Amino acid sequence: MQDKAAFTPPNMWLAVLALSLATFMQVLDSTIANVALPTIAGNLGVSADQGTWVITSFAVCNAIALPLTGWFTRRFGQLKLFIGSVVMFTLTSFLCGFAHSMTELIFFRALQGFFAGPMFPMCQTLLLVIFPSSKRSMALALLSMVTVVAPIVGPITGGWITDNYSWPWIFYINVPIGIFASIVVWTQLRAREETTTHAPIDYIGIALLVLGVGLLQVVLDKGNDLDWFASSHIIIMSVISAVSLVSFVMWELGERHPIVNLRLFKDRNFAIGTLSLTLGYAAFFAINIILPQWLQTQMGYTAIWAGLAAAPMGVLPLIMTPIIGRYATKFDLRILASLSFLTMGASCLIRAQFNTDVDFRTIAEVQLFMGIGVAFFFMPITTIVLSNLNGAEVAEGSGLATFFRVLGGSFASSLTTWIWSRREVFHHANLTESVSNYNPAAVDYLDKMGGATQQHMAFIDKTIEQQAYMMSTIDYFWILGWGFMALIIVIWFARPPFVRSGAPSAPSAGH
Image (tube, rainbow, N blue to C red; front, side):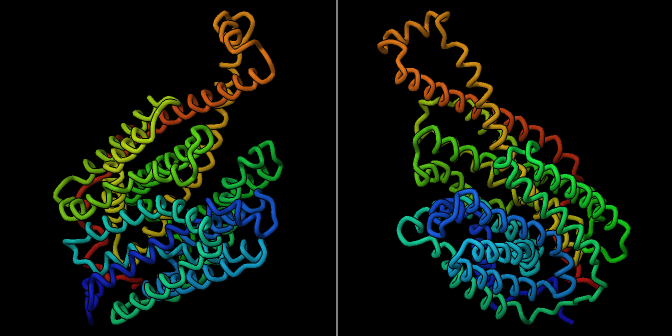
């Protein structure tokens, strides 16, 4: 029998291109629709709040599908699962663009999110399979580049397509990419043998997972809109989600054929690596949320210019990826991960020195500097995560780690908006106290403006609001900066060696 772990496709780089394009398309789609939401809601005749379900429905079903990747792999095999996911993702992308009502769009986005779930873990697993063991760090570095670049390109591309064409085209562009990727990957890898198993279906585990993760994702997506626990809906969903998730963990640990292999967390490197990946990505994601939001709402940037200010972050990862992939295994990967956290933390602390006079160039230069940290982030940590996993565990571990990474991004999204607005209220109240008849500086400033007219007071209030948001932004970057520094300590609890990434000698599917 052919050694499945040592399989080489007829054209290695064509296979790599197709796998990377499919993953790029999937990661891109998680952000590309965001900037088009106002246009979509307007064209389909619904409110902006209803339009956000386009994002929520995708996120909920994506979060549900990710932990199931391991079971799908055992049942259908890695290649069939990947091809099936790409084909169905492509079909649902077309249906999203073809939707004539918000109900249809939300339904198809939910399906699109579900089929998107296994694509990233399967791409990661297949890349580890087709690359020789000595070059697997290159495979992970390549995938990390895709993971970094796609979220940057997404909003810019989405805005450009929406402005110059129409919103359905943000979904239609997936069709030719999906067709190309599925045909090429199938023709290149179909000769590879796989073993599948038909274990009993854990229906109770699936039900608890869907209920717990689904409601948790809705709470995270809708919490800010509904004022969190001031809403009875959020309270009810949170309680049901918490009970479901606790029950799910207890059930899975005692189940003979679990739908999600939580026993992987017994492995020290997987547990530490997943924790570092989740928290590091959450902080990284928070930067990508708060920076464009601050630039657009307080600094007068358009969506395109805010995207361009953030874009330099992807430049150095593009240049450094081949070098890191080639030489990373010659170093202790904990050093590379520490360098990543140190650089990204330092970039946040530099941003904490910003003021409202900061220019485009300075913002872009800090983003460029942070790119060094981003380049060293995904590959070393992913290698640590997978270092002790064998065979089917690689797909299970990849799916589970990706799930927690995505969940970390969801928490970051909700908490960033909440903390940012709360700190603005706090600073606004403190600054407003200084504008009174008892403050000579305030009185003198108003006199120079021509007195305390309604127009002048409105101008001052707007200035205070801008400064309050600036101070809130500074606060949050301080939190993120020291959070990254703390992760340097966490990653050193991982235990070398890490060179066994993906267990080269192991079979690729359940046995």
